[in-house]
Length: 114
Length: 354
Image (tube, rainbow over all chains, first blue to last red):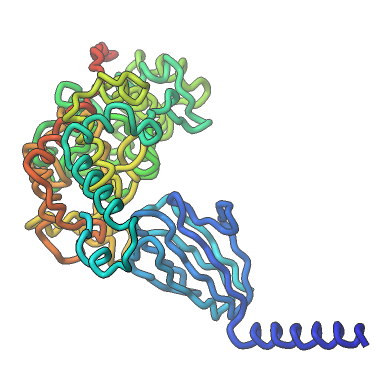
Protein backbone atom coordinates (compact mmCIF):
# COMPACT_ATOMS: atom_id res chain seq x y z
CA UNK A 1 0.00 0.00 0.00
CA UNK A 2 2.72 2.43 1.04
CA UNK A 3 4.77 1.69 -2.08
CA UNK A 4 1.76 2.36 -4.24
CA UNK A 5 1.19 5.71 -2.56
CA UNK A 6 4.83 6.71 -3.07
CA UNK A 7 4.69 5.56 -6.65
CA UNK A 8 1.55 7.52 -7.47
CA UNK A 9 2.71 10.69 -5.65
CA UNK A 10 5.95 10.62 -7.60
CA UNK A 11 4.13 9.94 -10.84
CA UNK A 12 1.67 12.79 -10.36
CA UNK A 13 4.39 15.25 -9.29
CA UNK A 14 6.56 14.28 -12.26
CA UNK A 15 3.55 14.74 -14.50
CA UNK A 16 2.94 18.21 -13.11
CA UNK A 17 6.61 19.16 -13.53
CA UNK A 18 6.71 17.81 -17.06
CA UNK A 19 3.53 19.67 -17.94
CA UNK A 20 4.86 22.95 -16.56
CA UNK A 21 8.03 22.60 -18.65
CA UNK A 22 6.01 22.09 -21.79
CA UNK A 23 4.01 25.23 -21.05
CA UNK A 24 6.60 27.86 -19.91
CA UNK A 25 9.98 26.22 -19.94
CA UNK A 26 12.37 26.27 -17.01
CA UNK A 27 12.96 29.46 -15.09
CA UNK A 28 16.43 30.74 -14.25
CA UNK A 29 17.31 33.67 -12.03
CA UNK A 30 20.37 35.70 -13.02
CA UNK A 31 21.31 38.39 -10.54
CA UNK A 32 23.04 41.65 -11.37
CA UNK A 33 25.32 41.78 -8.36
CA UNK A 34 28.49 43.82 -7.77
CA UNK A 35 28.37 44.76 -11.47
CA UNK A 36 28.47 41.12 -12.58
CA UNK A 37 26.01 38.52 -13.84
CA UNK A 38 25.65 35.99 -11.05
CA UNK A 39 23.95 32.59 -11.14
CA UNK A 40 23.50 30.57 -7.97
CA UNK A 41 25.98 32.78 -6.16
CA UNK A 42 28.78 32.63 -8.72
CA UNK A 43 29.77 34.83 -11.65
CA UNK A 44 28.42 33.31 -14.84
CA UNK A 45 29.69 33.79 -18.41
CA UNK A 46 27.75 31.10 -20.30
CA UNK A 47 24.25 29.81 -19.58
CA UNK A 48 22.93 26.85 -21.56
CA UNK A 49 19.19 26.80 -22.08
CA UNK A 50 16.46 25.03 -24.03
CA UNK A 51 13.98 26.76 -26.32
CA UNK A 52 11.17 28.11 -24.17
CA UNK A 53 13.23 28.63 -21.04
CA UNK A 54 12.80 31.90 -19.19
CA UNK A 55 15.51 33.98 -17.54
CA UNK A 56 14.63 36.45 -14.80
CA UNK A 57 17.21 39.26 -14.60
CA UNK A 58 17.12 40.50 -11.04
CA UNK A 59 18.92 43.69 -9.96
CA UNK A 60 20.50 43.19 -6.55
CA UNK A 61 22.87 46.20 -6.68
CA UNK A 62 22.04 49.54 -5.06
CA UNK A 63 22.23 51.35 -8.42
CA UNK A 64 20.56 50.90 -11.81
CA UNK A 65 21.43 48.36 -14.47
CA UNK A 66 20.18 48.06 -18.07
CA UNK A 67 20.37 44.58 -19.52
CA UNK A 68 20.14 44.25 -23.28
CA UNK A 69 21.02 42.12 -26.27
CA UNK A 70 21.58 43.06 -29.90
CA UNK A 71 21.87 39.44 -31.05
CA UNK A 72 19.61 38.58 -33.99
CA UNK A 73 18.46 35.41 -32.22
CA UNK A 74 16.93 37.42 -29.39
CA UNK A 75 17.07 41.19 -29.38
CA UNK A 76 15.83 42.99 -26.29
CA UNK A 77 16.32 46.05 -24.10
CA UNK A 78 15.01 45.63 -20.57
CA UNK A 79 15.46 49.34 -19.80
CA UNK A 80 16.89 50.40 -16.48
CA UNK A 81 15.45 49.28 -13.17
CA UNK A 82 16.57 49.63 -9.58
CA UNK A 83 17.48 47.29 -6.76
CA UNK A 84 14.91 44.66 -5.96
CA UNK A 85 13.26 44.71 -9.38
CA UNK A 86 13.35 42.04 -12.06
CA UNK A 87 12.46 41.61 -15.70
CA UNK A 88 12.18 38.31 -17.51
CA UNK A 89 13.06 37.17 -21.01
CA UNK A 90 11.81 34.00 -22.70
CA UNK A 91 14.26 32.52 -25.18
CA UNK A 92 12.05 31.19 -27.95
CA UNK A 93 14.64 30.51 -30.68
CA UNK A 94 17.83 28.42 -30.73
CA UNK A 95 21.22 30.13 -31.05
CA UNK A 96 23.73 32.30 -29.16
CA UNK A 97 22.61 35.46 -27.40
CA UNK A 98 25.18 38.02 -26.21
CA UNK A 99 23.87 39.81 -23.15
CA UNK A 100 25.37 42.96 -21.63
CA UNK A 101 24.56 45.84 -19.37
CA UNK A 102 24.39 49.11 -21.32
CA UNK A 103 25.60 51.09 -18.31
CA UNK A 104 28.42 48.77 -17.20
CA UNK A 105 30.19 47.22 -20.20
CA UNK A 106 32.24 44.86 -18.03
CA UNK A 107 29.00 42.91 -17.45
CA UNK A 108 28.75 40.37 -20.20
CA UNK A 109 27.36 36.86 -20.56
CA UNK A 110 26.28 34.50 -23.33
CA UNK A 111 23.09 32.44 -23.41
CA UNK A 112 23.28 29.34 -25.62
CA UNK A 113 19.79 28.18 -26.54
CA UNK A 114 19.30 24.69 -27.97
CA UNK B 1 11.97 62.12 11.31
CA UNK B 2 10.18 60.56 14.25
CA UNK B 3 6.44 60.06 14.26
CA UNK B 4 5.42 60.73 17.82
CA UNK B 5 1.78 61.49 17.24
CA UNK B 6 -0.41 58.72 15.86
CA UNK B 7 0.91 55.44 17.17
CA UNK B 8 1.11 56.33 20.81
CA UNK B 9 -1.96 58.52 20.80
CA UNK B 10 -4.07 55.53 19.92
CA UNK B 11 -2.04 53.07 22.01
CA UNK B 12 -3.64 50.78 24.44
CA UNK B 13 -3.07 51.97 27.94
CA UNK B 14 0.41 50.69 28.72
CA UNK B 15 2.83 51.83 31.35
CA UNK B 16 5.59 51.48 28.75
CA UNK B 17 4.18 54.09 26.33
CA UNK B 18 5.16 57.27 28.24
CA UNK B 19 8.66 55.90 28.97
CA UNK B 20 9.09 54.90 25.34
CA UNK B 21 7.92 58.30 24.20
CA UNK B 22 10.51 60.01 26.42
CA UNK B 23 13.21 57.65 25.19
CA UNK B 24 12.38 58.40 21.54
CA UNK B 25 12.36 62.16 22.12
CA UNK B 26 15.74 61.94 23.84
CA UNK B 27 17.25 59.94 20.99
CA UNK B 28 15.79 62.37 18.46
CA UNK B 29 17.30 65.34 20.28
CA UNK B 30 20.68 63.67 20.48
CA UNK B 31 20.71 62.69 16.81
CA UNK B 32 19.85 66.23 15.79
CA UNK B 33 22.74 67.64 17.80
CA UNK B 34 25.65 68.48 15.48
CA UNK B 35 28.28 67.21 17.90
CA UNK B 36 27.02 63.64 17.60
CA UNK B 37 27.31 63.73 13.81
CA UNK B 38 30.91 64.86 14.02
CA UNK B 39 31.75 62.25 16.62
CA UNK B 40 30.37 59.54 14.35
CA UNK B 41 32.54 60.47 11.41
CA UNK B 42 35.82 60.63 13.34
CA UNK B 43 35.95 56.96 14.18
CA UNK B 44 33.33 55.26 12.06
CA UNK B 45 33.29 54.50 8.34
CA UNK B 46 36.21 52.19 9.10
CA UNK B 47 34.64 49.51 6.92
CA UNK B 48 33.28 51.89 4.30
CA UNK B 49 36.69 53.48 3.84
CA UNK B 50 38.32 50.22 2.78
CA UNK B 51 36.34 50.01 -0.45
CA UNK B 52 38.34 53.05 -1.53
CA UNK B 53 41.80 51.63 -0.82
CA UNK B 54 43.82 52.11 -4.00
CA UNK B 55 45.66 48.93 -5.05
CA UNK B 56 49.46 49.20 -4.91
CA UNK B 57 49.85 47.29 -8.19
CA UNK B 58 48.71 48.83 -11.46
CA UNK B 59 47.22 46.18 -13.74
CA UNK B 60 49.00 45.48 -17.04
CA UNK B 61 48.34 42.89 -19.75
CA UNK B 62 50.75 39.89 -19.74
CA UNK B 63 52.13 40.81 -23.18
CA UNK B 64 53.03 44.29 -21.98
CA UNK B 65 54.32 44.09 -18.43
CA UNK B 66 56.12 47.28 -17.43
CA UNK B 67 59.91 47.56 -17.50
CA UNK B 68 62.02 50.72 -17.07
CA UNK B 69 62.95 50.54 -20.77
CA UNK B 70 59.31 50.35 -21.83
CA UNK B 71 58.30 53.25 -19.59
CA UNK B 72 61.21 55.42 -20.84
CA UNK B 73 60.40 54.68 -24.47
CA UNK B 74 56.73 55.36 -23.86
CA UNK B 75 57.57 58.68 -22.23
CA UNK B 76 59.65 59.76 -25.24
CA UNK B 77 56.82 58.87 -27.62
CA UNK B 78 54.25 60.59 -25.37
CA UNK B 79 56.18 63.88 -25.49
CA UNK B 80 57.22 63.60 -29.15
CA UNK B 81 55.35 65.95 -31.53
CA UNK B 82 56.78 64.17 -34.53
CA UNK B 83 54.01 61.61 -34.12
CA UNK B 84 51.61 64.20 -35.55
CA UNK B 85 51.10 65.26 -39.14
CA UNK B 86 52.17 68.80 -38.31
CA UNK B 87 55.19 67.62 -36.26
CA UNK B 88 53.90 70.00 -33.63
CA UNK B 89 51.30 68.15 -31.54
CA UNK B 90 52.28 65.42 -29.09
CA UNK B 91 50.13 63.44 -26.67
CA UNK B 92 51.41 65.82 -24.00
CA UNK B 93 50.10 68.85 -25.91
CA UNK B 94 46.61 67.97 -24.70
CA UNK B 95 47.47 65.60 -21.87
CA UNK B 96 49.69 68.20 -20.22
CA UNK B 97 51.31 67.05 -16.97
CA UNK B 98 51.27 70.65 -15.74
CA UNK B 99 47.48 70.80 -16.08
CA UNK B 100 46.46 67.52 -14.43
CA UNK B 101 47.29 65.57 -17.63
CA UNK B 102 44.49 67.43 -19.41
CA UNK B 103 44.66 70.91 -20.94
CA UNK B 104 42.45 73.18 -18.84
CA UNK B 105 40.15 73.83 -21.82
CA UNK B 106 36.42 73.08 -22.09
CA UNK B 107 37.11 71.02 -25.23
CA UNK B 108 40.41 69.99 -26.82
CA UNK B 109 42.17 71.75 -29.68
CA UNK B 110 43.48 69.76 -32.63
CA UNK B 111 45.28 70.04 -35.94
CA UNK B 112 45.17 73.58 -37.33
CA UNK B 113 43.95 74.94 -33.98
CA UNK B 114 40.53 73.41 -34.59
CA UNK B 115 38.27 73.21 -31.52
CA UNK B 116 37.23 69.65 -30.79
CA UNK B 117 33.94 68.37 -29.42
CA UNK B 118 34.89 66.93 -26.06
CA UNK B 119 37.01 67.79 -23.05
CA UNK B 120 40.48 66.18 -23.03
CA UNK B 121 40.21 63.44 -20.39
CA UNK B 122 42.81 63.49 -17.65
CA UNK B 123 45.13 60.50 -17.76
CA UNK B 124 45.40 60.31 -14.00
CA UNK B 125 45.03 56.67 -12.87
CA UNK B 126 43.95 55.61 -16.37
CA UNK B 127 46.05 52.51 -15.74
CA UNK B 128 43.12 51.24 -13.69
CA UNK B 129 40.59 51.71 -16.49
CA UNK B 130 38.85 48.71 -18.00
CA UNK B 131 37.55 50.85 -20.86
CA UNK B 132 38.74 54.18 -22.27
CA UNK B 133 37.52 57.42 -23.85
CA UNK B 134 34.29 59.31 -23.21
CA UNK B 135 32.28 56.88 -25.34
CA UNK B 136 34.28 53.80 -24.40
CA UNK B 137 35.43 53.07 -27.94
CA UNK B 138 38.95 52.09 -26.83
CA UNK B 139 39.14 48.92 -24.73
CA UNK B 140 42.77 49.33 -23.63
CA UNK B 141 45.37 52.08 -23.27
CA UNK B 142 47.33 50.35 -26.04
CA UNK B 143 44.38 50.81 -28.41
CA UNK B 144 43.52 54.30 -27.21
CA UNK B 145 47.03 55.65 -27.90
CA UNK B 146 46.46 55.39 -31.64
CA UNK B 147 43.03 57.02 -31.76
CA UNK B 148 44.12 60.68 -31.47
CA UNK B 149 47.21 60.01 -33.60
CA UNK B 150 45.12 58.85 -36.56
CA UNK B 151 42.23 61.27 -36.10
CA UNK B 152 42.56 63.99 -38.75
CA UNK B 153 40.97 66.58 -36.47
CA UNK B 154 43.42 65.78 -33.68
CA UNK B 155 47.05 64.79 -34.33
CA UNK B 156 46.40 64.12 -38.01
CA UNK B 157 49.03 61.43 -38.25
CA UNK B 158 49.16 58.28 -40.33
CA UNK B 159 50.46 54.87 -39.33
CA UNK B 160 52.78 54.73 -42.33
CA UNK B 161 54.28 58.18 -41.79
CA UNK B 162 54.85 57.56 -38.08
CA UNK B 163 56.61 54.24 -38.71
CA UNK B 164 58.84 55.79 -41.36
CA UNK B 165 59.80 58.69 -39.07
CA UNK B 166 60.59 56.51 -36.08
CA UNK B 167 62.58 53.91 -38.02
CA UNK B 168 64.76 56.71 -39.40
CA UNK B 169 65.81 57.79 -35.90
CA UNK B 170 68.62 55.56 -34.52
CA UNK B 171 67.80 56.54 -30.94
CA UNK B 172 64.31 55.10 -31.35
CA UNK B 173 65.54 51.97 -33.13
CA UNK B 174 67.77 51.09 -30.17
CA UNK B 175 65.13 52.10 -27.60
CA UNK B 176 62.54 49.79 -29.20
CA UNK B 177 65.13 46.98 -29.37
CA UNK B 178 65.75 47.35 -25.62
CA UNK B 179 62.08 47.64 -24.69
CA UNK B 180 60.56 45.08 -27.04
CA UNK B 181 63.43 42.87 -28.24
CA UNK B 182 62.63 41.13 -31.48
CA UNK B 183 59.31 42.93 -31.93
CA UNK B 184 60.59 45.87 -33.98
CA UNK B 185 58.92 49.24 -34.45
CA UNK B 186 55.28 48.45 -35.20
CA UNK B 187 51.84 49.82 -34.48
CA UNK B 188 51.64 47.31 -31.62
CA UNK B 189 54.93 48.20 -29.94
CA UNK B 190 54.24 51.94 -30.24
CA UNK B 191 50.86 51.50 -28.55
CA UNK B 192 52.37 49.23 -25.90
CA UNK B 193 55.17 51.66 -25.04
CA UNK B 194 52.84 54.64 -24.70
CA UNK B 195 50.50 52.56 -22.53
CA UNK B 196 53.43 51.50 -20.33
CA UNK B 197 54.28 55.13 -19.66
CA UNK B 198 50.64 56.07 -19.05
CA UNK B 199 50.37 53.35 -16.43
CA UNK B 200 52.88 55.30 -14.34
CA UNK B 201 50.61 58.37 -14.20
CA UNK B 202 49.26 57.62 -10.76
CA UNK B 203 47.66 59.80 -8.13
CA UNK B 204 48.02 58.34 -4.65
CA UNK B 205 48.79 59.34 -1.06
CA UNK B 206 46.10 62.00 -1.04
CA UNK B 207 44.74 63.15 2.34
CA UNK B 208 41.83 60.80 1.61
CA UNK B 209 44.20 57.87 1.05
CA UNK B 210 45.90 58.60 4.36
CA UNK B 211 42.54 58.68 6.07
CA UNK B 212 41.61 55.32 4.47
CA UNK B 213 44.89 53.94 5.81
CA UNK B 214 43.82 54.89 9.32
CA UNK B 215 45.20 58.41 9.83
CA UNK B 216 42.04 59.89 11.33
CA UNK B 217 43.30 63.48 11.31
CA UNK B 218 44.16 63.45 7.60
CA UNK B 219 40.73 64.79 6.66
CA UNK B 220 38.99 67.77 8.24
CA UNK B 221 35.61 67.30 9.88
CA UNK B 222 34.05 69.05 6.93
CA UNK B 223 35.69 66.61 4.52
CA UNK B 224 34.56 63.65 6.62
CA UNK B 225 31.00 64.95 6.52
CA UNK B 226 31.55 65.29 2.78
CA UNK B 227 32.50 61.59 2.61
CA UNK B 228 29.31 60.68 4.46
CA UNK B 229 27.30 62.73 1.95
CA UNK B 230 29.27 61.32 -0.98
CA UNK B 231 28.39 57.76 0.05
CA UNK B 232 24.93 58.66 1.32
CA UNK B 233 22.57 61.54 0.70
CA UNK B 234 24.34 62.93 -2.38
CA UNK B 235 24.30 59.46 -4.03
CA UNK B 236 27.68 60.03 -5.73
CA UNK B 237 28.72 56.41 -5.31
CA UNK B 238 25.92 55.34 -7.66
CA UNK B 239 28.57 56.01 -10.34
CA UNK B 240 31.75 57.24 -8.64
CA UNK B 241 32.46 53.86 -7.07
CA UNK B 242 35.48 52.08 -5.76
CA UNK B 243 39.10 53.02 -5.20
CA UNK B 244 39.27 55.00 -8.41
CA UNK B 245 35.86 56.63 -8.01
CA UNK B 246 34.44 55.28 -11.24
CA UNK B 247 32.16 52.38 -12.14
CA UNK B 248 33.77 52.35 -15.62
CA UNK B 249 30.20 52.85 -16.77
CA UNK B 250 28.23 55.28 -18.92
CA UNK B 251 25.64 57.81 -17.73
CA UNK B 252 23.65 60.73 -19.12
CA UNK B 253 23.86 63.53 -16.56
CA UNK B 254 21.37 65.83 -18.22
CA UNK B 255 23.82 68.53 -19.29
CA UNK B 256 22.09 71.45 -20.95
CA UNK B 257 22.66 72.02 -24.63
CA UNK B 258 24.64 68.87 -25.42
CA UNK B 259 23.65 67.08 -28.63
CA UNK B 260 26.59 64.67 -28.41
CA UNK B 261 25.27 61.08 -28.66
CA UNK B 262 28.16 59.79 -26.53
CA UNK B 263 28.03 56.06 -25.83
CA UNK B 264 25.03 55.60 -28.17
CA UNK B 265 27.39 55.75 -31.15
CA UNK B 266 29.02 52.55 -29.88
CA UNK B 267 26.10 50.83 -28.14
CA UNK B 268 22.80 51.75 -29.82
CA UNK B 269 20.56 51.19 -26.82
CA UNK B 270 18.23 53.93 -25.61
CA UNK B 271 19.86 54.48 -22.22
CA UNK B 272 23.22 55.10 -23.93
CA UNK B 273 22.00 58.28 -25.64
CA UNK B 274 24.06 61.20 -24.35
CA UNK B 275 25.81 58.87 -21.91
CA UNK B 276 29.48 59.37 -21.15
CA UNK B 277 32.05 57.49 -19.13
CA UNK B 278 32.30 58.17 -15.41
CA UNK B 279 35.75 59.71 -14.89
CA UNK B 280 37.88 59.30 -11.79
CA UNK B 281 37.64 62.00 -9.13
CA UNK B 282 41.25 61.67 -8.01
CA UNK B 283 43.09 64.95 -8.57
CA UNK B 284 39.75 66.52 -9.52
CA UNK B 285 40.94 69.89 -8.19
CA UNK B 286 43.59 69.86 -10.94
CA UNK B 287 41.43 68.87 -13.90
CA UNK B 288 38.92 71.69 -14.43
CA UNK B 289 36.78 72.33 -16.38
CA UNK B 290 34.41 69.43 -15.77
CA UNK B 291 32.06 67.16 -17.76
CA UNK B 292 32.46 65.75 -21.27
CA UNK B 293 32.06 69.23 -22.74
CA UNK B 294 33.86 71.20 -20.03
CA UNK B 295 30.57 72.81 -19.05
CA UNK B 296 31.55 73.68 -15.47
CA UNK B 297 34.59 75.61 -14.33
CA UNK B 298 34.26 74.97 -10.59
CA UNK B 299 33.34 72.08 -8.33
CA UNK B 300 30.60 74.29 -6.83
CA UNK B 301 28.92 74.42 -10.24
CA UNK B 302 29.24 70.65 -10.58
CA UNK B 303 27.64 70.02 -7.21
CA UNK B 304 24.84 72.45 -7.98
CA UNK B 305 24.19 70.50 -11.18
CA UNK B 306 23.78 67.26 -9.26
CA UNK B 307 21.74 69.01 -6.57
CA UNK B 308 19.27 70.10 -9.24
CA UNK B 309 19.15 66.51 -10.53
CA UNK B 310 20.55 67.60 -13.89
CA UNK B 311 18.98 70.05 -16.36
CA UNK B 312 18.10 68.24 -19.61
CA UNK B 313 15.55 65.65 -18.48
CA UNK B 314 15.35 63.72 -21.73
CA UNK B 315 17.04 60.34 -21.35
CA UNK B 316 18.45 61.33 -17.96
CA UNK B 317 20.30 58.58 -16.08
CA UNK B 318 17.85 57.10 -13.54
CA UNK B 319 20.37 57.52 -10.71
CA UNK B 320 20.09 61.32 -11.10
CA UNK B 321 17.59 63.10 -8.83
CA UNK B 322 17.33 66.43 -6.94
CA UNK B 323 19.29 66.04 -3.72
CA UNK B 324 18.07 68.82 -1.44
CA UNK B 325 21.58 69.69 -0.23
CA UNK B 326 22.07 72.54 2.22
CA UNK B 327 24.80 75.11 1.61
CA UNK B 328 26.90 73.53 4.37
CA UNK B 329 26.49 70.10 2.80
CA UNK B 330 27.66 71.44 -0.56
CA UNK B 331 30.72 72.97 1.12
CA UNK B 332 31.43 69.68 2.87
CA UNK B 333 31.30 67.82 -0.43
CA UNK B 334 33.79 70.23 -1.98
CA UNK B 335 36.09 69.80 1.03
CA UNK B 336 35.93 66.05 0.55
CA UNK B 337 36.75 66.33 -3.15
CA UNK B 338 39.72 68.55 -2.33
CA UNK B 339 40.98 65.69 -0.17
CA UNK B 340 41.36 63.52 -3.27
CA UNK B 341 44.37 65.42 -4.59
CA UNK B 342 47.31 63.01 -4.60
CA UNK B 343 50.87 63.69 -3.57
CA UNK B 344 52.23 65.50 -6.61
CA UNK B 345 55.36 63.94 -8.08
CA UNK B 346 57.77 65.83 -10.34
CA UNK B 347 57.64 64.86 -13.99
CA UNK B 348 61.04 64.63 -15.66
CA UNK B 349 60.79 65.59 -19.32
CA UNK B 350 62.54 63.24 -21.75
CA UNK B 351 65.19 64.23 -24.27
CA UNK B 352 63.87 63.12 -27.63
CA UNK B 353 66.18 61.08 -29.83
CA UNK B 354 67.47 62.67 -33.04
